[in-house]
Image (cartoon, rainbow, N blue to C red; front, side, top):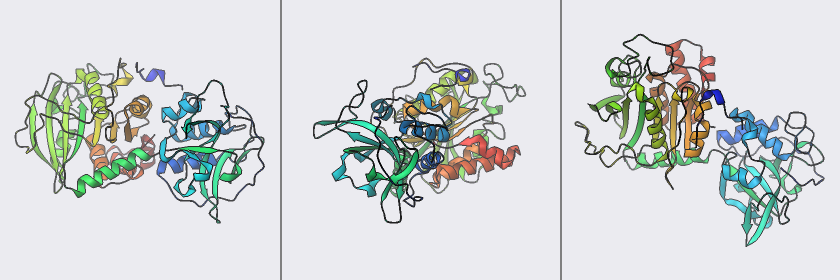
Length: 449
């Protein structure tokens, strides 16, 4: 895969026309799902009353898929045209969530609506072939089923009737009883599941007192080899970790964590490899949590970003032969698994392209990812999606990627806070040091897709 730099921002149904009589139902009061699911539902509700028009993809006219496309655009900031209009490919892409076990192809008579959650994407299936260019979405009891309609689960009314937000053929965008829509079976996808699993994994590791690892790659600030606004020479020497803006300076990762009351530096070493000039290991006081930070030579920023993506894609990191850190009661030569992977530094994807991406490991545990680099959401969106990393914190604009923001986000992560809470933490820390205003800082950071 060829990943383009920022100048090439990614610019990325069918339904059978059936008229079904229905009732427009009152506001939903159903169970609350993950933040992303809820945002998706609320985004879709903004289009209530928009007329149904076949192929509609605007605020003035929508069909069932157009409703989902615009809701997706609203919560991600992405171009809806990156989504496939073929249901099978749309599901496979995972951009509208992952299949929900037990709801990934269930007959109408076997459907337990209590398993649905607000914001779930519902694919309504029929036995009849709907469109020649697509394949059946699922086979149930060896019988193929095709998608004919789509909607968003909208909770329950006061009588516990399951509701669906959808662009109703021949009518408009409505919320109506799920069973008023014609279908033989449904298939459901859901946002937010990866983070739920991450939290469960962390809770188990903490309960069992097993070590938890945070791996941070720092691309040293470099006036010569990076497309940055030049900083004073002593701060922008990418071969000098000791004085570098992102490492040894007061806001650098090594210095800031070393001076922190919550963290203790238990080991450090230099010249780890050709590209890694220094490695530090910090232990969270009173907890079995370790932060491993690598300082990459500024001129090796491309390698730093690729190695960061490798850490996201695979379960094992830090495979340095015969590498045992003095002072740390941990042997790293066989590698460790990081539950949180971070990148700090200049966004090199603004300057160059990657010719390839690492292959994601099969059946790996999902992990959180923090990218403190300018415009990281725009440039890393598709990459993280393909590698399975969950964007716990990334950015929508220009920023100073310094360690006070990183530490604040990590504090929230250790406390098992939600992505939204961690975003607020990061914004407060950034505003405290940069004096940019809290609202401006909040707009700078995003969590999730």
